[in-house]
Length: 84
Image 1 (cartoon, rainbow, N blue to C red):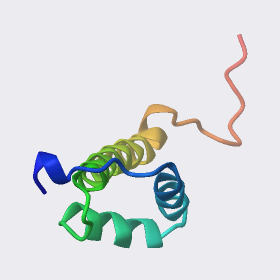
Image 2 (cartoon, rainbow, N blue to C red):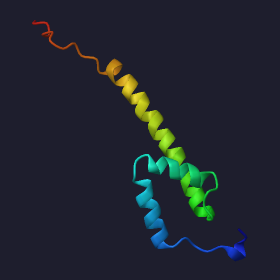
Image 3 (tube, rainbow, N blue to C red):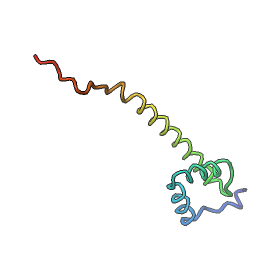
Image 4 (cartoon, rainbow, N blue to C red):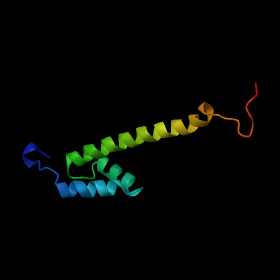
């Protein structure tokens, strides 16, 4: 798409995009399609690529926290603390 053919994405189109991104599983499928060029607009392609990068980073951080949480905050349950 050349600069002379460039048209801004409408507000309504962005609203639909945000609704689609809010639907679990559908969001991943559509973001991958848009990121790989399944959209006629470069802004939506870039948005999808950025969103997928942020999803991947968030997933990795969440996984890291989930794996490290028990090791960092390990408490012995059912054992009374030593008395004085």
